[in-house]
Length: 184
Image (cartoon, rainbow, N blue to C red):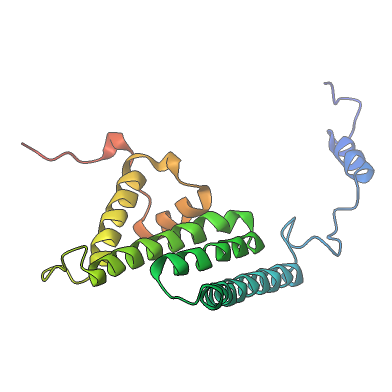
């Protein structure tokens, strides 16, 4: 494009394009070039806190309610009755955001597995180990090893928000081509 007819060397074209564009000043819903305003973030945080509080209170009260109802109806107390009474309690999970449901489910699954093996050991179906008092620590260590392995070798299995946290905790790993090899 020949700018010889423009004495300002193309600057007038830039000024004309800026003049025809909408006003770049921030509006009431934009803050810091597209980021949320502090009151919007605070509102979302309060709604998230209220939602999680409602979930937790519904979950706990529902567990007691269904269990007590079954105990009163059938006039007995045993492990299958507790399992049947607490099963509908999981429906309270529908209150939480969809993105948090899997995380909460995995946490509850770990607690359920721990409770199951504790009950089995208390009933005498499993031998109690004298050397391993805290099996949850061993499971946590094994799980952490898997996460660290995936973080070092297969980073693409993590969501970006989890990857950012892991990068902050462990530091950004070296690429495979720069990873030092052990000498044999």
